[in-house]
Image (cartoon, rainbow, N blue to C red; front, side, top):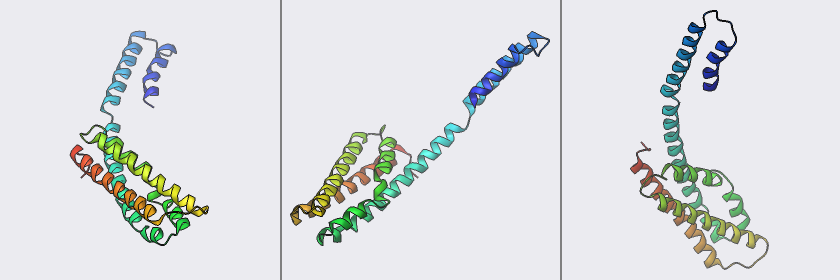
Length: 178
């Protein structure tokens, strides 16, 4: 839209509609100047900052909900309900963890804990995928060691908790959270 604002005065100059060419050039320059100021003063940057804060807060809330959801899966692990675990992993908010965590990683990428945040996210995703792979293998009939499966589950819960703590600390330190 800003592009159209800039082009309209130039079309008026070239169209020959104006008798006084000096006046039309002046109007064109005024139009370009006004459009330039409008694009600089545009509140879109302020809205983007507010929406980033809102998105970051929402993403942090969803990650914390994912922790609670993941905690509730322990019975599936203990009772060897592999199919139920696989299905439960694919239900929101845990199914949307990559998107929410990515929002938090981007929000904290300029902060002092950026590398720790990214590393903890990658660690969580790796353990979650390994948990899912183990459950898939069990569903297909492969014998699974219960202790190893429970340990992988606990690693997954711990790594998501660690990511959440680092994200919260990073976001609060960055000043993007209320």
